[in-house]
Amino acid sequence: MTVVAEMTGVKVLFAHDTEVALNAAAALVNTLDGEEEHLPDLAAVEDFMREWGWTGQRPRTEAELDAVRALRPRLREVWVADEERAVTIVNDLLREFKALPQLAKHDEWDYHIHATPHDAPLAARMAVEAAMAFVDVIRNKELGRLRICAYPTCDDVVVDLSKNRSKRFCDDGCGNKAAVAAYRARKAARTSGSTAVDTSRSD
Ligand SMILES: [Zn+2]
Ligand SMILES: [Zn+2]
Image (cartoon, rainbow, N blue to C red; front, side, top):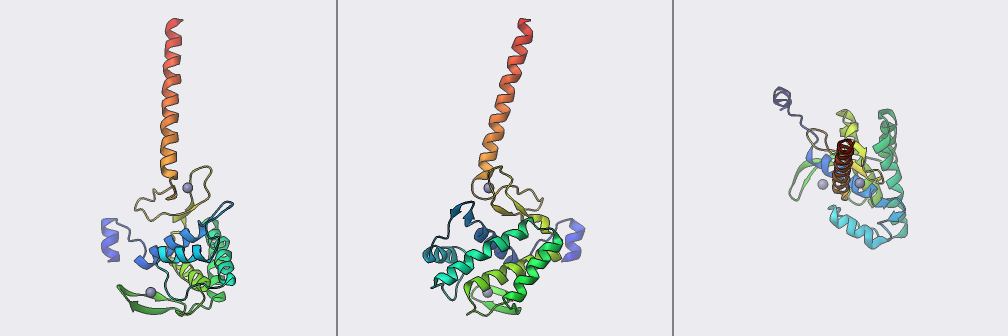
C-alpha cells in the first residue's frame, strides 16, 4: 500500500477514524466563535453530540458542560502550536485523561482505536479522541494541515484533508466571502484601469 502510494505519488492521508476525529475536534473548537458561545447549555452539547456521532453517556451536569467548554482552548492551541509544543499538549491530554488504547469493532465500524472506556466522562472521551488523532498527524509530519481560516476576520480552525493542501478557509462561508471580495477587487481594478486609459486618451 505504502509502496504503491509512493510509486503513484498519491499520498495516503490518515485512517478514516482519525479524519473524523480531527473534524469533530475542529467543530468543537469552533463552537467558541470569538465572543459567540455555541455551547450555551447542556441541550446544545447534546445537539453537538448527535451531530458528530458521540454516543454513550450523555452530559447531565453543569460540570460536564464546563469540562467540555474548557477543553476547547487546549485543543485550539494545537492548531497554532509548533511541533514540540503540540507534542506536549497531546502527551498532557493522554496522561491526564488516562488514555488506554484498545482496538474495537462495533456497529458499521471496522477495527479502530478506543482509548477511553465507554463510561468515561464526555470531556475525557473528546480529549482523548482528539489527542489520538493528533498523534497520527504529528507522526505523519502533517501538523501543517491544521491551520486557522485565512479569512481576515475569522478565527475558526481548519483541518486540511485535501490532496494538494489547498483548503484555506473554514466551512462557515469564508471561502465564498473571500471569492466575492476577490471578484470585487478585480472589478475595481478593471474600472480604475479603464479610467486611466480614458485619461491618457484625453491628454
Ligand atoms: Zn468506536
Ligand atoms: Zn472562516
